[in-house]
Length: 258
Image 1 (cartoon, rainbow, N blue to C red):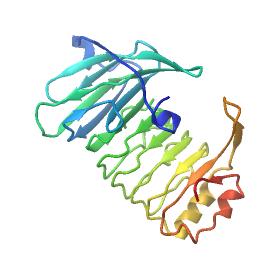
Image 2 (image 1 turned 90 degrees about the vertical axis):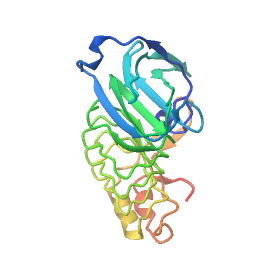
Image 3 (image 1 turned 45 degrees about the vertical axis):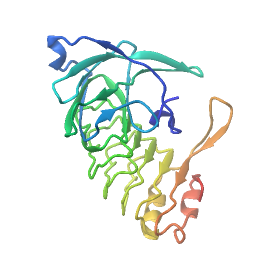
């Protein structure tokens, strides 16, 4: 089960390395580029830190320039769990020094998640096909997802964000954004099914505005036969106790642990 991409956040998988060619710097049709700056000594695939990539097909090649003169090409592998199929890469890398490094990832990237890797900045604007994006537990002070119109799930909690614009993410189904936000506009996110917005600085009026902007809630039966419902979590926030939860409840939203 994938990390961000399954909401309950666990990753398993493997990746294959192949040698680089002279054409690795050429951007082909359907490819995108993601760049981030990290202060981490090492990037691993474990419970503490992780870098995870998902592609559209098995055998898709992803090039990673680690920012220290080393460049590697990875090939995605097919994974199956409970009849769900996806194609993933879990690269790991250790740096010789302790300085910051700018990492550049290129390829047909469907999903990207990096967590607890001391990332100070990240650019996903040149990866318009990105559907799943996670960057929680880092050191980001800003995040631009204005070009990511295909984005379906975004998890950016536990950074230092004071603002977040998701108005261009019209396909967004899930959002986790616990930071230092005082307002959040979800009026354009008509596909939204779950929202984790606790641990921010929302007043009661700001929360009420979020509730008003939520789309009509949905209910469905999942693949295991359980009933699911549009879900929101908003604790804690300064206005959590005095906001009008009935605004969201009357639209078919269920409050998780509130």
